[in-house]
Length: 124
Image 1: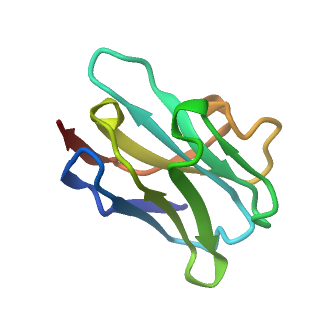
Image 2: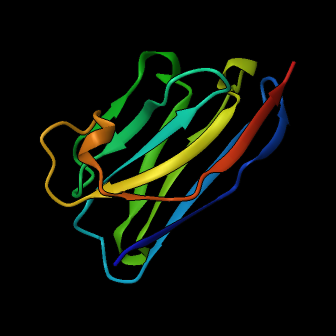
């Protein structure tokens, strides 16, 4: 069994930065593909960024390109999301997810392990 625990969320003013972390425990997932999703109030869950197990392949949704960076430290079983130039539209609960074999990094249904989420609130 795998447990994912997110941290680093909080309240920040527009233009500010936050760094989210997602630590895995239970068994090693260093060779798992990982992603960050978010769900804003009254909106559907959407993928924010994803990274392949090797780190060689990454994906970003258009709205965060150039502002967010996903990275991973396989030795620490941790994935990160550096969020810069935050906007009120980034306000959401952010979830990390992991999966072994994946066809499409962007599809939520592909992931079988999820964290409990961390709230990110960006004030204007």
